[in-house]
Amino acid sequence: MKLCAVQLASRKGDLEGNLQRHRYCIEQAAALGARLVVFPELSLTGYEPTLARQLALPVSSARLDPLQASCDRHGITVAFGLPLPTPNGIHIGMPILRPGEPRLTYAKQRLHDDELPFFAAAMQSLVFEVDEQHIAPAICYESMFMAHAEKVRAQGAGLYLVSVAKTAKGIREGYEHYPEVARRLNMPVLMANCVGPADTFIGAGGSAAWDSHGNLLAALDERTEGLVMMDLATASATALTLPDLPA
Image 1 (cartoon, rainbow, N blue to C red):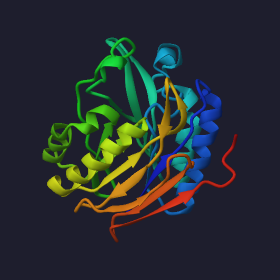
Image 2 (tube, rainbow, N blue to C red):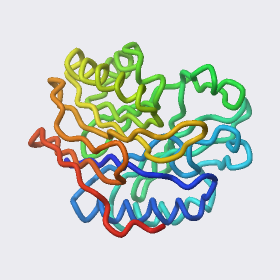
Image 3 (cartoon, one colour):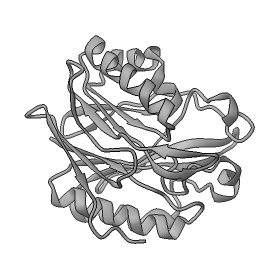
């Protein structure tokens, strides 16, 4: 099974423009044989906490139908970032669209202190299946706690799918932590980070894949929009730039 992490510079608050860029990335990943694609944290709106309430959409929104159509056409599962409205507040969400199946949602369970004024924490972990692979999503800050990975591993996860919006410091810490997750839990890790302006920082890229022994298989640099293609069957990965990405 092939998976893809997309490293993307989302446009601040530009839902329609970001939808177009997401669809392009899905097309590129599908052409390379990906069965699952993951985007950075809050990728559809950009990581912009102050705009989250006004940009939030339910996973059932018709505005997501173009992404669903891409999933259906290519037979590919797509996990992306979006603020989700709930009765308890706005969640940092990861809708998961699957071809011909009901939409899933995952939301961040552990929030950073500076997210607390804008978001509410979710409560439930998720393990979902693609081509008989059991996959657990994690969103940024919570993925830096071994307990999160240990919990989903105990629930049957065989791959850790990490969606982040990290600074250069955060990526350095992630490059120490994620290999340890992989080694300790015998679980490959695929991580998608943003590049470019996000909230009050610059996304530091470095999207990467690690095998179940903690070996770094492939990574992108700190500024390039691109794809990390991971092949679970061969325990290999390749980093590719994205040509002609829509502006």
